[in-house]
Every structure is written in structure tokens, then in C-alpha cells.
Length: 404
Image 1 (cartoon, helix red, strand yellow):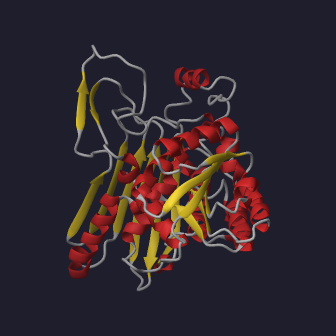
Image 2: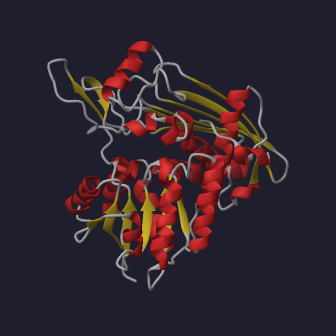
Image 3: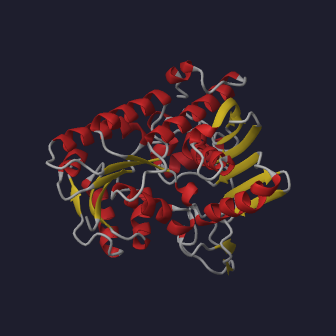
């Protein structure tokens, strides 16, 4: 096979990020998009054609039709959290209609809204019987990939393994209304963003080439709060931004979260990850940092600093936009500029990896199983915050836990 023809489920912001990243990925193209509306699907198809990564891409009326199309080789699911099970059911139905099965299915973080739903998504994938990929871009971000390689090779091999990883991601809030609707999203900032931080921190602490199971999570303690968006003035802002869709004052989840996870290595050493996420950050761009500490070394990565800054005086006026950096929160003053966000955040790297995996060149490094394990930690964090106690992530009762 010369190319992997990708179909996208969902036509929104994250799909367009993935499509833009494919400019840097060989041996693939965009074949089609199915979304909640034909208009959304057609807009994503237009992006694929604009960037010349999908010259023959077309909009599909349903996920089942997209999955059944013999021209489509693999699917990238970027739909809303509340649709994950129904989307997988449509893919199963579409795959049954094919002469040749799909070559793979990727799914954007988080895998679902709860651990029970994540396990159901995984079960449907196992029934379909094709390789899977869990899309966690931070594990493919060039700055983190290179940093981990250098610290483990030059630091850990000489002085001993790292023992503490920190990750923080904060911005002013999501793009779309559904993120602010707890029943649809499944939660707030913890589910939306801490999935990045917890998984990246765990990965930084894991020895290169070692299995995920080489680190066992023992305890999770967490805090969730509403620091900004339940205040009357800001709740009113959200209602004005998303009229008739969002009433955060009356019906909210959380806009700030922090979590500490205790891990045990195969030889009994205790490690820690500390993560925080918020939709309350006010500043140019966003805050996105990582730290890794070992006995004789340390690492600091600031993903928001790409080495480029621009300045606009108060005389420069324009519409609000995100043309400088994702989640841009300023239009004047000094601001960071990220020249190539899809590559900087790891989308190009992860898509290159999963294209290679589904073409049979390597095994997927992240699967739906990994997404389930991330969800297990997220549910433990929610329960810890709600019950104000430390949670054992191996507790089977987490399967029944629902944050909303």
C-alpha cells in the first residue's frame, strides 16, 4: 500500500489541527469527513484541500457510510465525548459492510466520559478487531521527545532514574459550547486537559522502551474547584458567548484541577507526578510547562515559548483570533508566536507514528488500552476531589464512578 487514506469523524477544531499536521506526514491523505452536520464536514474537507493533503476528500452523511467506504483505510475519531460509543457502533456496522477491513482506528483524548464508557469503547474496538491508537499529542511533541531522550541517556543512566514529574496546562477556556456542558463533556477541565498532563508526566518518568506496566499507580489525591467562571460576571460572559447553551452558574463542573499520583517502579522505588490544569489563566497565549527531576539533574520545558514574540501597541485593533497561538487570550501587547503549532504540539509526530503503524511498519505505541488507563486515573482524581480522600486507582468500583 502506497498511502493510508484517512477518514475523520468530527469536523471541528481538533480535526482541522490534525489535517494541517498531515502536510508533514508521508504516505497518507484525507479521504473524507463525517460530522454532526454536513456543513461542518464540508468545512473540514475544504481545509484538507487547501493544504493539499486531501485532493479527493469528500463529506459523508454518516460515520457508518464513512467507515463502509472501501476508499477509506483508517479512521481518526475527533467527535464529541458523548458520541464515542455511538460512533464506535457505527464504525462496527460500517466495517461489516466492507470487503477489506479497516486498517486502524485512532481516537482523540479522552477516550470517553467515564471509565465504564471507555471500557465499552475498548470492547467494541476489540470486536471490530483492528489496531487502535490513542491520540495523545504531548508524547510526540518534539521538545518533550528530545528532552526525555537526553535526560534518560545522560542523567538517569549515570545518576539514577528521575523521581518527580510535573505538568501544568492552563488557558482561558475551550472554543466550543459543548466543553462547558457537563453532560456532553463528562466533566470540566480535569477531563479535558489533565488527561494530557497525567499521561505526559507518567511517560516522562517511564524508562525509554519500558512497558507502561513498569510503573504501577498506587494512590491518587486531587482537588477540583471553580475559581473564575462561576462568578456572576464571568458566568454571564459564558452565557452571552454561548446563548441558550451554557449556564455555568447553575450547571457547572470545574475550571481548576490539580492531582498527585504516587507510582511504584518494578524494583519498588516510589515516584510522584504532580499535575494541574485550569480554564482560568489570563495572559498572552497559554501556560504549558513540564518539569522532570532526578537525583543530579532536572528538566524544564515551556511549550508556550517557541522563541518568537510579537508586539502590538494599543493603536492596533482587530478581531479576536488564534492566529498567533492556540487559546490566544490577547490582541495587544507582547505575545508569543508559535510558527508551526501542529508540529510543535506533537500532532505531526503522532500522526506520522500511527500512519506507519497502520501501514504495518511498527506497532502502535498508544492504544485504546492506554486510553482506558488514563481514564482510570482521571476518575480516581474526580472521586478524590469529591470525597476529599486518597483513592486507590485499582479499586474496581471506579468503573461505576461518574463525575457528572
